[in-house]
Image (cartoon, helix red, strand yellow):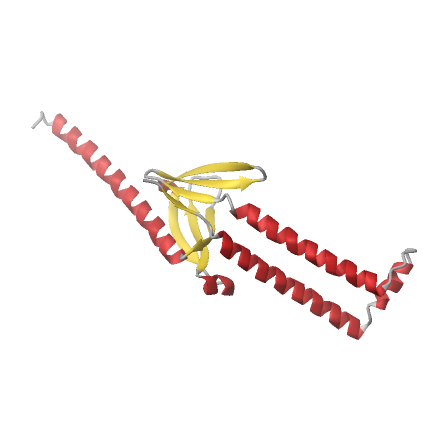
Length: 191
């Protein structure tokens, strides 16, 4: 039976909200420093050179609206990128279903093309939420690796993927051994 692994959408949302709020906080801090050091009126004066008159309150309002719009765009884009993303592990291969705009792209990866499985949860948000990325090094394919992003318990997922690959390799080895054992028996004249 196939096993499906998906990114944790709730945790992706939390991480992206925290990251975006951090960037907004840095932007506000820069604005405060600029206002205290040179004054935001300087930007209004610079715009007057181009015959654009802007009041300080309108400029601040526009910057706040711009930051909120960027915040919403980042959140919506992050949700759309992971809500339909899934990794399906079958007996012979894994399939990656990745959303691309309104469609879903499917990519099959044979276990014989996966050379190494590693995980990382170096990010402070990932450590706090027990999520991370599982990286699969690939050979004989167009890309060098595949990152399974924002999976819960990345150490367990990496161990699971390693076990699936090991089971596949043992199965292939057993089939190879059985095939050549039967051939040797037939070559020697039967039982």
